[in-house]
Image 1 (cartoon, protein in one colour):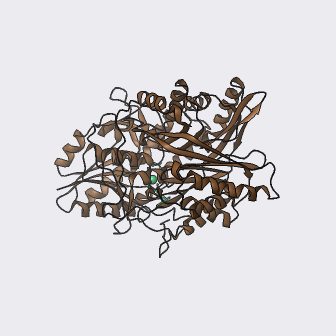
Image 2 (tube, rainbow, N blue to C red):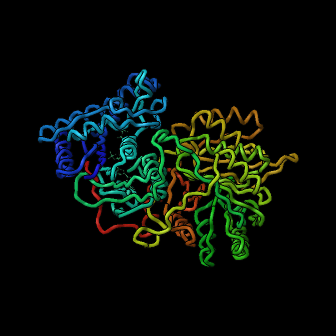
Image 3 (tube, rainbow, N blue to C red):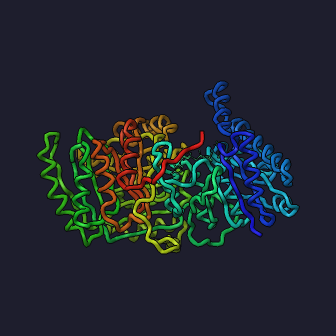
Length: 603
Ligand code: ADP
Ligand code: ASP
Ligand code: MG
């Protein structure tokens, strides 16, 4: 006998006919021996409809009342599914988050789960019932039962959290596509089904725009080692297995607020190559990294900052051993760029040998804007200047002077209470096939770009900027500090650019304009018309040429790259919003990710 948690998303329970079909699927899973706990979303587009109703009354409704409203959607579907099961002769009971005892933080509309009581569910299971739980909701405590919701798409998180708390054999997420695909089939119908994906890869994909799974659900699966499957509620296909590292025993209390940072990683074997003042036009990054790939040189971090005037800076790190080769390529390319008619100033190569890369990593930093700020503040307090910043949703990497390495590690380990080395992620699949360099691609059209000009080149400036954003609860992604140091009146300054969710963009700009006056920075620029396109694959580490191929695909369509950031397992580019969809399509094609058949998404 196994305990299985199944989650059915909105389209899967979009009509009473669908609800009846889901009841049949659940009965099949029971097969006379298994126990099933079901988590459901609101029917179809119910939650969107409720949001619309609220907007008709208020442009800024109270978050508490929004939770009260939105949590009703799931209450309808649990009752109907429970009735459908009973009607088919299967004992069942529906329970709201409060009735189960899903306790969350007191943050309305984006609460994290703190604890889950399992007694009531277990009692009903032992009586042979299927327990149908409302996804996406919880309560703050057992005194005032304030209803909270987990954020849009949060039913996935409810399901995986329940699976962890109940120590279920597995968690199955049923949705409207056959599983996790190489990209969104609504944009690229030729997307191919993945038979498996690692948690780390899925975390990146989910937070970069692949909404098939809520990133926090992946985080919980990873932390608790919950076997997770994503599959279609329309077919019998096997779906996608999300592979977790070996589970570490962990208490359920503090479920989603366990340590934000799992590891401090450090690498001294690094050198930096920067190309300053290259023309801002399509094809430059493709050309540079194409040549580098031809030399079989593996680049690690790549960043390209926003342009000033009409030139860009591109910087990347390589292991020291191959620096000479990388430098030779950059030197050979610089004069070619200089001779281009679009040049404004002279392109120039800058090399730095004595650098170190220091990173904090952990899935718990998703949606916690204070973590990057805390890293920058910690480094500033230790007197360490940050030369380059590169981020992903689960990692913040900084390039610093190698001489500062020891004190930087000590300070970060103390600040984040880390004393051990990180959990090693699998480098190959269980069937011992190497991981593919690119597993999937994602497009995020909901980001905006902010840039602050002339930030003084002193320790503590990044900390100030990102602390202010964190205080306003604004999560930041893709932070890039420009390579070029401007010196005016003996004061050195750099630009810092980053992306935030569009919904946060205006307020971010307002609070930063205020701060810019206090810390004597220049203008704060905002561009909401951007798209972020990313490739993800754990196999790209140590595989030269992945970045070059991505940039070449964009260049072939004359798509200009405005910003680049990378982590070990992903590369993200910001392009104009109007070019986002084409960018996704050409990159998907370049990596030959298309399947044989087109995916049809049920309406
Ligand atoms: P549910 O209501 O079942 O939770 P969602 O709409 O939240 O379903 O998520 C499923 C949708 O995610 C799919 O219909 C698809 O359009 C979209 N999607 C985006 N990226 C991917 C991807 N890489 N693989 C599969 N689906 C994706
Ligand atoms: N019904 C909620 C939403 O639409 C939760 C979910 O479907 O996961 O966001
Ligand atoms: Mg969903």
